[in-house]
Image (cartoon, rainbow over all chains, first blue to last red; front, side, top):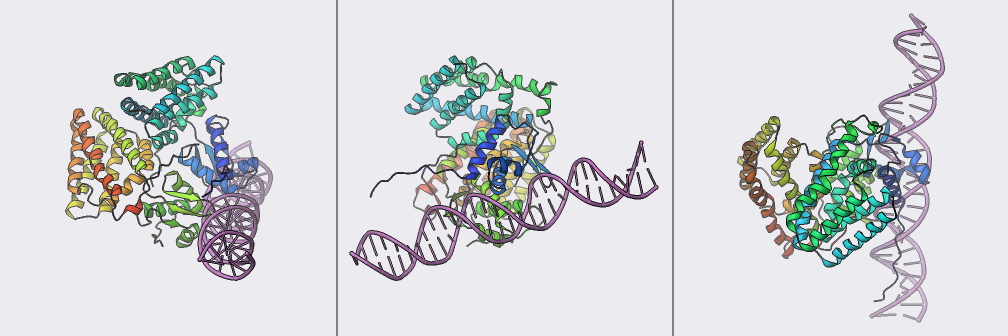
Length: 238
Length: 238
DNA sequence: CTTATTACACTTGTATACTAGCATACACGT
DNA sequence: ACGTGTATGCTAGTATACAAGTGTAATAAG
């Protein structure tokens, strides 16, 4: 049998559109509450409505858009309820995951985690943007799930964290890069030294504590008040 | 070939198709590995391909179908990796949730839980089907999440549990209705009496323990061997 | 001026024709 | 008997026309 070159599958219009629109929403380029038009997007991307509609169906699943038939499609406003549930889910699962990682974690992924730390440090020194650091942060946490062979769990968290991640981006200060970087170093150290007893305080500090300032963000009458939607909405059951 | 249901209300064609096809897959009426055709489904449901395509896009997100362009769409085989991650997620989140429920739980939902118990008992006496009991089981666990105001978390678990629920259905014996019913009673009692210390053993017994027999199901050369897919597949990165 | 009505522009929902790529069968040449 | 080209029928991907409902603004009636 002969081995031949494999061509990178040129992605189709649908996946391209998904990446593009989702990115626009997650970076707040498309603002919470803003109406979006299938036709508009289709024209901007130079494709037809059909793939756009399938993209919107996906985004709807992730609570990123709300569709009202015969009226319009809107970027969802940030729902505190969804933020809270995402925080709960992340904290709970990542806490358990770190405990697993303390028992057993592959060396190669641990190495990648350390490499990620170096990249973060580099970006910090270079005064990188919030957006850039957020990307590295995501990649860092993903690596932990990958190491524990829980990639799909990470995917589920990601889908649930759309509102959580937007509010993080909104609160620019967050906890400073420096602080987050310091905590990431602690996480790696915990895994490396199998210091299981340090897991709980770490989660409390790294995930739960920072959220408190975000609550202020939507409870106060801030400049971003119109980005939030306090009405409770049940998810679709089907 | 596939056989499908008939529609009740004049709901959205897309939502109708989604319910129908998903149900067919989850009940194993559409078998793991089986090819499905957009045109075929469209004709059986008496609608066009467009809404069907949007349905398939959703099912793909839930790991229920795999689409190969220009080739075909197939019901996913059961992936042990996905089962394991679903069990991990359910056990971890429900454990934490029960602890929350022990601290605070609304009376009206607690009442609904007790009503659900009675329905389950009734169904047990009437020798209901596996399918019927599974429905009640789902509704029971959902109520707990609703009571703790974590409905979206339940939704996330549901999306991740498609393979887990199929393997449950496959292992007919499961742990008998009687056993499950007994454990559901214990759960209600734990919430009712705020017996926080009993949560951990309950989770171990009700969720973690029963899974062990399922692993045999796909590891052995059983009659259902061709329903399983042991190849590891990473989720789509977005 | 106020109020009711109507026309219209806009949205998403649906159906359908067409495009492009893969897999199989089969004929053909070696 | 075997490998190769090719016709053909299948698939999902896409574009587009049309249907049906909504909100709004112009318009007519009071």
